[in-house]
Amino acid sequence: MKFFADTADVDAIRELNDLGLLDGVTTNPSLIKKSGRDILEVTKEICEIVDGPVSAEVTATDANQMIAEGRKLVEIAGNIAVKVPLTLDGLKACKALTDDGHMVNVTLCFSANQALLAAKAGATFISPFIGRLDDINMDGMELISEIRTIYDNYGYETQILAASIRTVNHVKDAALIGADVMTAPPGVIKAMANHPLTDKGLDAFLADIKAAGIKIL
Image (tube, rainbow, N blue to C red; front, side, top):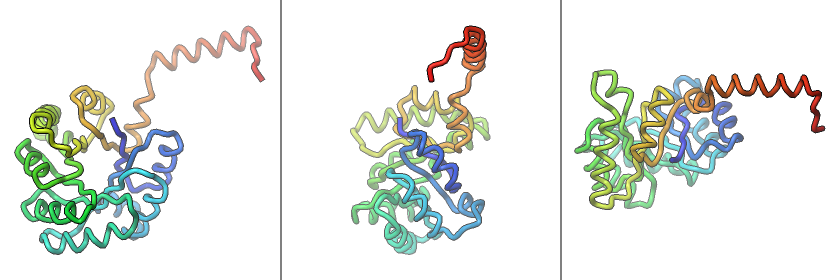
């Protein structure tokens, strides 16, 4: 499974990248707004930090304007994935941009039918939103499973990018189902390393080392 960080915080991105845990980044206008920086400036800096895909979202809703914005965004760097919404206009933009040879991330997916349309339009990534479905008492993981089955049935190459991930269990469940990618806030990714028994075991090891006076260097 590939790990993308869902943030525009360049310090957090750099930390995860230095740890070797990062395969890409997803951003959106809301995350850019939190950073307080110009969208093109911060996106360029992120692209310089990570080698993998960096999703940068269009702001338009009209297909022709989305295509124009997408072509502007891909000028930032070679690893830009243009992020478009899962609407008919977004699908039209997806088809045009993929025909140009660009990566496209179709976002705001909430049904398997929508994911099927995105694959037909040539999307590089489809982003089903797990947490937001859970918020309205629907099963976000069931959607991941449905998309996985449909894509495997027909050999679609569109990668399932599990999004709106809130917990480490979301990551685990998406991985078990077979999502190709997951994107999560940096805090969730780092929390995956935590376990109380690991902490307890390390404390015991350190106590024994101190008692025995063991030194390696």
